[in-house]
Image 1 (tube, protein in one colour):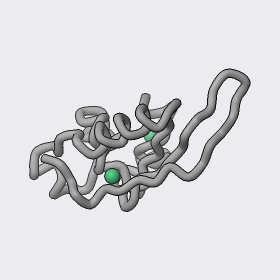
Image 2 (tube, protein in one colour):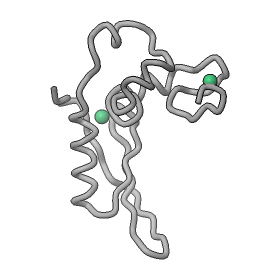
Image 3 (tube, protein in one colour):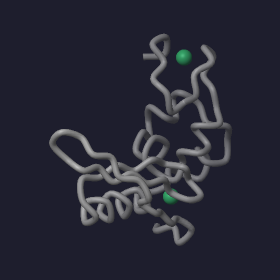
Image 4 (cartoon, protein in one colour):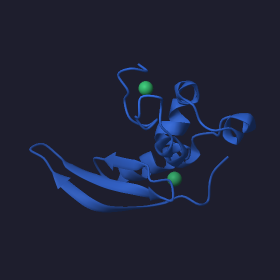
Length: 103
Ligand SMILES: [Zn+2]
Ligand SMILES: [Zn+2]
C-alpha cells in the first residue's frame, strides 16, 4: 500500500570532502532521508513511502521494542517512524534510538 500523505522536500545540502549530501525530512512522518544525488533522494523517498504496513493488530496496540525488532523497516524508515519515535523503552530511549540495554 502506498501512502499519499507523504511529502518530502530536500532543502539542505551538506558538503563533505568527497560528496554533496541532500537531506530531507518526510512530512508528516518526520523520517530523515539522506541521499547523494537528487535521483538517489527520490529513490530513497519512494522506498520510505512504499514500505508495507505491518498487520493491523500491530498498528492497533502501543508499539513495543519487539515490534520494532520485528518490523524495523516500517518503524525505523517507514511511516511507523513517528509512532516509534514517540514511544520509549523501559530504559528511557525512544524506540528509534539505539538502546544498549535492549540490544
Ligand atoms: Zn512519510
Ligand atoms: Zn531499552
